[in-house]
Image (cartoon, rainbow over all chains, first blue to last red; front, side, top):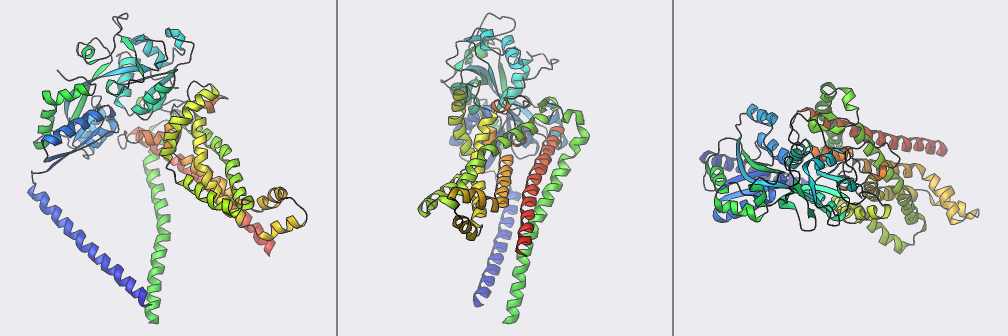
Length: 300
Length: 298
């Protein structure tokens, strides 16, 4: 019996202590908030999986040079990042596509005024298994493959094998870009969509793993993600169907490789303070050098 | 002293009562939330679109049939795979295995239950997927069948532990009587023990089905997630997309309150109803048995 009373006493004491300490921290936070100490800035950065490695590299370098700023970088997809921006849970959203009108509207509805920054450029590489003898495809062939009109590799100069189409999930900016630029060939009135048997894989790694393993597969991914274990195809544009071009920093910047796009960062509003400094640094030659080392293409 | 005892008793009783009621409260709140977010889909998306066969939400195609079909096909296949292994292991554990074997096997099954499904999915991608493609000469190893095998593995521990409990609850007198009239060990298991534990075993299977139906990560990693209507004879050996994988991979992207968001919650309602049906079936089976047992005893 005495034990029980002791136990009850203990529980009461713990509850009281917890209550005291909790109210203590609340007070502390309040006083911190009112002074708005500029010493330690915390920037949250989230979005495109294409950009995540680059954003991480930037954040690491920037934190080395500016130890007073701490950055957190997460992926999840462009849509995820922009949704988080609208709900004000991140300061900077990474996106591999431009913000959609609906998203902009949603942001304006909660009083935000998103600002757009082009921070790097990316080429989408079309990849196949190294065993696949096909070396190049025209943009139109690619479109027909992904629409489900070409179903065997022999139709595009390969072996008699079924074509297995791989794509990222629909929340990936790369998916949307590929739909518009390749499947619809840039024609905004075209309503064609991915063939229904296209495999939608949840990650870049998933696409690379299946292409590496399966000689029937065709996939696409940001140039920065392509590993040496898969083969990158040369692609020709609509106007010059016989000039096949392998994606590289050079061919993206002189606009001969056709499947390339800008990569963006969005802020909640016109940036100030630490966020403004960080974005200015990202566009500096020093930060753009990191872009090149990761297989992306620097702006300008 | 006695007064204090009564007082503390009632306090603890109260706390326990709150714990018990809280789970009812949580389920009710979750259901209300699901209904509030998901039911508007029925108003904003025409029924003919919901029950079509194209799922491509970023262009406004909301056909749920491929997803429902995918989930059902994978779950049924997983059950067919898990059933013999699960019940076989349970029978072996409870009726045949010597004690030292039991002591090894039981923890191993429990460890299997404890492996996170994402780890199984990872092994699936690296080992099962290439194996399936080469063995069955498929275009790709990312198929419903690969998912069903993984789901079977996930459902087996649930089936084993509940079915084994049911078998252990069969009074030893049943077995002794069977052996006394000259039945072999197999005849005893097949003719007496298993029928006597039938309801517990059925409950085990139902819970295994529920486990397979709700599993997300492993399925998302190995089924290819192509929203193809599974209406061909070989659909199980083609890529398919389940309801859970759809919610998991698309929820992060949608703007809250949008049509797509409502449809994803509507899929959540369907999943809730399906697992409710499985649970009701399981409990109906077990209560029916209890009534019969009571009749026999009285």
